[in-house]
Length: 349
Image (cartoon, rainbow, N blue to C red; front, side, top):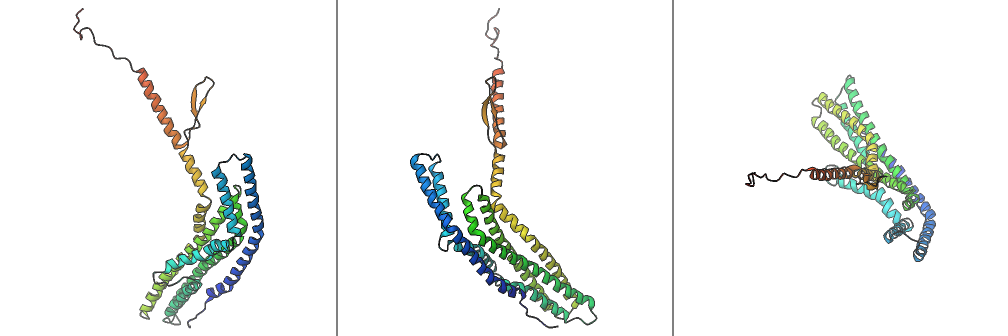
């Protein structure tokens, strides 16, 4: 049995990456051209109608609110219709700059030089060579020992395939979201559709997180596998059983890595979901827990009562009011101390 140099995963990425980038660029260009004219027209109409309403005095909103809406609309129009703005700040940022920058920061110091598509091939090729070193020390009758080597190879290939599939799917989904972006960015202008825009941003961040976590897992796998290969190389052909123990430890590690890889999409979705569209829910929960002191209301007898208290403020307000009333009632009920008696004043009856 001889060594092999197959670059399966790098070949797949080479065949997919270029058509993917070209397709995303074509779809983005088509959608940007489609929404450019309606957005410019909407901005002109909004400015004109807002100016007429201000001159006629029919605008009741504060000036800060009107200015905020105008700036938001101008920002959206600039992102969608500006020359290369969407490509620079959305496409290049999420598809290239963030994943590559974080991967470069991870591998800038350490034994692993760079993480890319070739790294997936490095994982299973190193596993192949480590198993091959043990295989060559075994005889033709060592069937059980050879089965352990085959199990090690299978675990390494399956674990690497899982990681590669998750990484590639995250790239494809990220490209799809970026291509749909020109249609979704204008939704940030309206309160009814702003949640869709926030979820889109959260999905972009989730895909980036998924790629980064996959790269981190691959980095860990490469570091551990490098130690396994070094251990097998140091042992040589001294004791095949000890080498098989190292391979069994590698099988367990690859199984754990495959399980962790399957959990990465849920992890990325949880992180990005909390960042994108759970923020409002958290704010509402915090406001509900804080509560309010309520307001006064007159009953049928003309007595004032406090209603609508809730949360921590309501409890504190009720406790303070009860303490104040209790103190006032105690003051009113306290009897007047009796004066000194005649004997105390020296008067004898």
